[in-house]
Amino acid sequence: MTRLPVFLLGLLATAPLAMAASAADAVRSGAYHQHGTTQGRPACDQRRSRASTQPAARPLRSLQQTHTVDLPWRQETDLEIGEYRDEAHLDGDATGLATGEHSYKYRMLEGLVVPPYVTPARLNLSRTIATQPADVCHCSFPKSGSTWLANILYLVLHDGHEPGQGAPLRSHLHWMESAWTYPRTREQVDALPSPRIFKSHMPHHMALAGGPRQSPCRFIYIARNPKDVCVSYYHFESGSAWSGGYDGTWEHWLRLFMDGRVQRGDWLDHVLSWWEVRGEENMLFLRYEDLKRDFRGQLARIAAHVGVQLSPKAVDRVVAASSFSHMRAAPFSNHKHIADFQGFFRKGEVGSWRDRFTVAQTDAFDRLYTERMADSGLTFTFE
Image 1 (cartoon, rainbow, N blue to C red):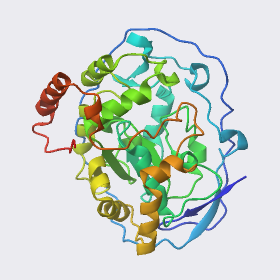
Image 2: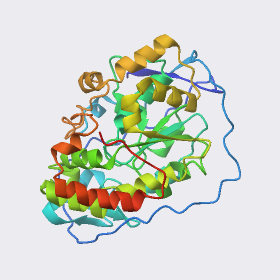
Image 3: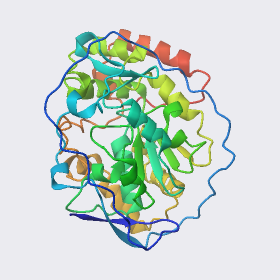
Image 4: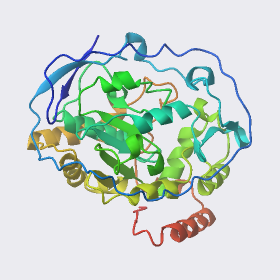
C-alpha cells in the first residue's frame, strides 16, 4: 500500500496508529430514478450563541516532524472513481430525491437542494464528526475555488511538496457529507492524526462539526463572484450523472440559479451565512478574486491561519504547484481519475461570465445581487 508522509502540528503521539477497516466496496453498477416535483429555498443561517470555549491561538511553527500513515481506504481499486450511480451512492436512502425540468436530479434535505449523494446519514456524520484544533475545513459554494484551496492547504501542511507518485489529492481530503467520491467512515477519520483536511459545500447552518462556533477546527471559506460561479456551475452540472444528465439551456440554468434551485441552493444565502461568522477566531473568509490578484499575500493569510511558518523556498514551491496550468496537468490534483471530472479545470479566470450573460440577463442579475447584498458589507470583483 502506498504510504503518505503527513507533517504534524502541535502534540502528536508517537505510537503507531490503529488503522481502521478498509474502504467501501467498489462502485456497483445499475441505477434507478425517483421522480418528484419538490422544490425549496434554504433559509438564511440564523446566528447561534457563541460556544462557551474558543480554540486557543496557536503560534506559527515550521514543519519539521514527519509521520508515515496508512490511508485505510487506499486500495488499488480506489484509484479510479466510477460514475455516480443512484444504486451505489444513495446509502439506500432515496428520501427527498426528485427530478425537475430538463432531467435535473437533486435531493431536498432539510429544505436545501443538494446532490443525491449528500444523504441524511452522511450529513449527520459530517455534523457530528470529532475535530481537533489543528484540523482544517475548507468550505465553499461549488465552483468557487475549493479544489484550488484544497491543493494549497495540502502544500502548506507539507512544506510545499506534492507527494509524488501515489494517492491523488482526493485521498487526502475528507468530504464527510458525500457518499460518492469520499466515502470515509467515522472510524477511518478518527484513526488519522491531526492536521486533517476536511471539505464541505454546505451552508453554515449545516457545517461540519457545527461550524466555527462549536468546533475547534480551523475553517476557511472561499467565495467567488456569483456570475463566474453560475457559468462554471452550468458547465459542471450539464450532462453529469449526479445531476441526472441535466440538458437545460443556459437561460434555464440562470433561472434556476437566481431562484436558488440548483444543488446547494441559493448562492446568496450560502455565502452570507459564512460571511456572518467571519469574525470567529478560527474562521478565515477568502475571495477567489483576491487569491488570483495577490496569491502570495493570501497564501500568507492561509498559512498563518493554520499555524504554519513557511520558508521562502517553501512559498515558492506552493506558488509553482498551485498554478492553474500545473494543477490541470498534475495527476495529483487534476481529478482525471474521477469519472465525469475530466473537464474539471475549465478556465479559472475572473470575468469569463461575459461570454454567457446577455445585457438583459446582466441587468436582472445585478438587480437581485444589489438588493440582497446591499447591507452585508461583502463585495466582489467581477472583472
